[in-house]
Amino acid sequence: MPIFNNADEVYEYVGGVFREAASHPDVGPKLMNVGAVLQLHYSDPDAQITVKMSDPIEVTTGESSGPADIHLYMRADDADAFWRGKYSIPMGLAKGQVRAKGPVNKILKLVPATKPMFPIYEALTAGRDDA
Amino acid sequence: MSMATTMQGLVFHAARDVRIEEVPTPTLVEATDALLRIDKASICGSDLHPYTGRMDAEDGFTMGHEYMGTVVEVGASVQQFEVGDRALGSFFACCGACWLCRRGEFSKCLGAQVFGLGMAFGDLGGTQTEYARIPMADLTLRKIPDDVTDEQALFVGDILTTAYDAVRKTDLRSGDVVAVVGAGPVGLFAMMSALALGAAQVVVIDKVASRLALASSLGAIAVNADEADAQDVILELTDWRGADVVVDAVGHESALKAAMPLLRMGGHLTIPGVYMDDEFTFPVGELWIHNATIHMGVANIQAHMDEVLALVRAGRIDPTALITHRLPLDQAAQGYELFASREALKVVLEPGAAG
View 1 (cartoon, one colour):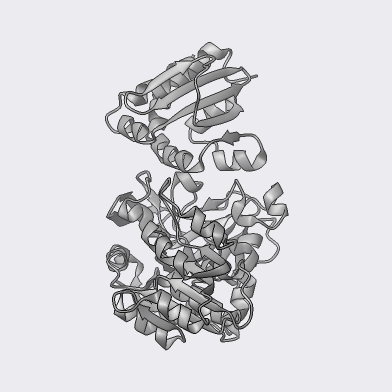
View 2: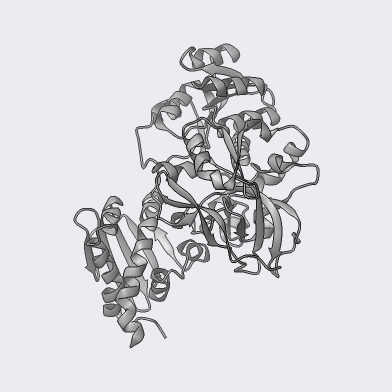
């Protein structure tokens, strides 16, 4: 059974981590520094999140018609595991579980900025995990 | 065997802020892992990318990826190694099973993890530590023959084979003339590799007198760019053709622009130097009219370590010539300062040595 019951839950938690990070004093500037539009395409359940990582950071949930620099395609369950520090995106890419499109240099800039976001995700999902 | 649950390791915190700390001793995770006691490690040019702030990296990972040591534990699926074996290892571990690995293009594996460079490169622990977990040990490690010393083996898994790979993937033929821009470790090892692979002459270009003197003592024609025109030297050597192979061993736009005019028609430009820039202006018309071939990217270490180890063992390449400093691991931060300021060429760190 999938971790997320529907797209709205993906938007609440995974979208939420980006929204919280945008206003975080340490993480926000690092995300802005990436200077790219990231589009996350999830399956099980299907969901799409677009994050404009420049000043100001904008998080859009649902279908977006705008262009993006980086596209990541993965299962929503794997996204949940990633934000809990339990899923390696490189290994996912090697196994074909994750598909990526876009400049690798910008992806490499983005990855180190995600580590300080793990506690944000943990805090966001704490209530859900307890339920 | 029973080991302490913590060990000493060099931890990255921020640019110019690396510290020796007590960190958890790694353990086997997969059946294909080995646990290596690090006997010697060194500081690689790519360690300087996070250290100098050229590369974004998160706080809190152990650093280092140039190493050799002794196997202290192996997973159930490891076939080539036993406890007690001396081994050197590649600076990265690859999955060994994906489409690219099956083609032998190990450095292009999407699942590759570089030791000690943080999350962006796979979040694998570093080797400037007392112990390291080595994934895919049968592919990542090589046994060190008894007649090869620790220091001779140390650079085979990284900088030496990176330089060798850069030259080997060109169309170098016996008797060719090679130009190397940059007399840092990768440039000097590229020079030594080119001679071992049959180059008649290798011209090394830099502005640091001590490095040029070393290049000259190792068999190169050394050119100080502040004092002579490297293009004139190469035209003179080649009957005005230009160099058959040019190595950009720096990784900076200025070096690349200095390298291009040295190339002959149909020559090969090879770039082991790491570029962190997103983009810059590139004289594509000049390269096109030269029929130039360009090679670049991460070296295929797993594919070429055996060749390089054989050359070292046979005495055709002496990697120890580049060692300028030997420090106990607990003085690693000082080693980084020496290396970043170009006071050191290769710094060897010894986890077992008293500080």
